[in-house]
Image (cartoon, rainbow, N blue to C red):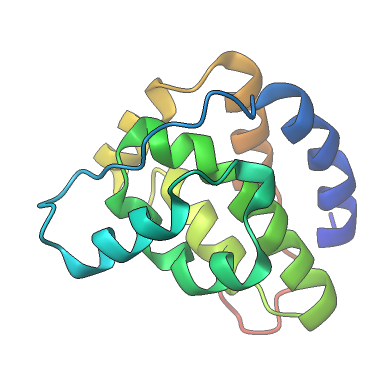
Length: 143
């Protein structure tokens, strides 16, 4: 499955299965004094997941695991969408790599399982589609 095909399949599911409101108050799983978490929560404050910009996703995708599970799951579709755009336009899957790692039980198994537990069934289906999709447009050899 190509990234372009994956993007088409997932977009409709994101809009349907991930509510835009209410926006959760960004908070984290780690000490509030953590600089990366403080910067990320400030950037997300008041932002709806469809409003995640490409530059925000590019800058903060590696910090997503710092967020609480519910907040991480709320912003997941915005980061996923921008990651799919990045892959298509720039042949770069860096954002997708970080987003996929959030739920990949082979990477940080216990935290991934905890994130998966708070997803609703339709949301879980989207996540499983992402995890199980072979990335055949992988210029950096990340998959």
